[in-house]
Length: 341
Image 1 (tube, one colour):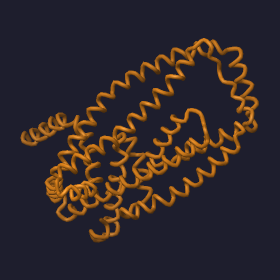
Image 2 (cartoon, rainbow, N blue to C red):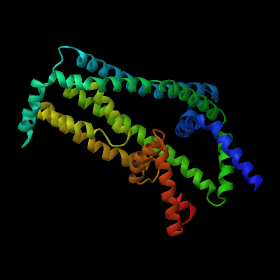
Image 3 (cartoon, rainbow, N blue to C red):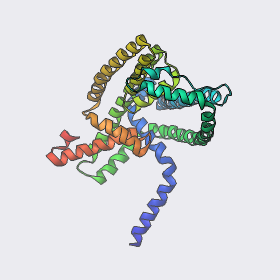
Image 4 (cartoon, one colour):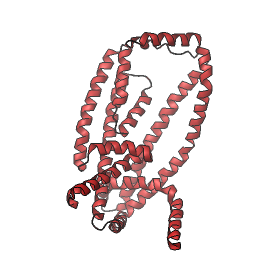
């Protein structure tokens, strides 16, 4: 009993020591497994000099991780600065929102109620709203302090990338030996399943995010909607969550029709239909390119993983669901390892 308690205590203390590095190590494993074939091709290109390939891959990963962070802060600072300055100015007036009248059935009633508020209580409304704006700004400034933590995690990811790229074969043998300890029959198969699913999910998530975001950005830029950079960020976020740009483009199309911009509204509707067709064609092709993977595993895994584990759950969630799905099939139908894994 004392030996067991000692092992449990030692494991708990080890976890506390390694806890700050768990997040970055998981990210690094996902990146290295997904990009390992590219690194091997670069190594052959540099005459089997691995350190040249590691330098190039580390630099590319750094750029790909840094660009979304800079884009996010640029969008927040650019849009919030002009909004807060105009809100606190003495000449601030609530917008007229004439488009409310065009809403069927209830539009005129909402418009007249809003006009009363803007004409008679504009000053009081702003005075009432200003303390909450200040509190929201203070909260945002406190959250920016986590930026240093994010930078530290990014550095750890790059360090782990270098270690894993340099000693990838040794880590593979270690993982295989551990998997055999867990299950002598299915150990190798589960490792193989995890590696293939990581590469497939990374391919699906990253490629669809890039393609859909690009097409969505083109549609927003063509339609000339205000606060363009903010909607570009929303499109990227929805595409990364595998929901596509339609949750942003459809309300923008409705807004254009309400404001009598029928030409741009029609263009954006047709552009949204084109993106929807592209999405339904691209995802199955990428899934078949990687491995047999049910789409509901990706969808529920991405959203549920994000809610459970944060941003890393976008990749962890589908992998866990996929392994559980294959094990359930194995238990139900008692198939061979090859057919299931």
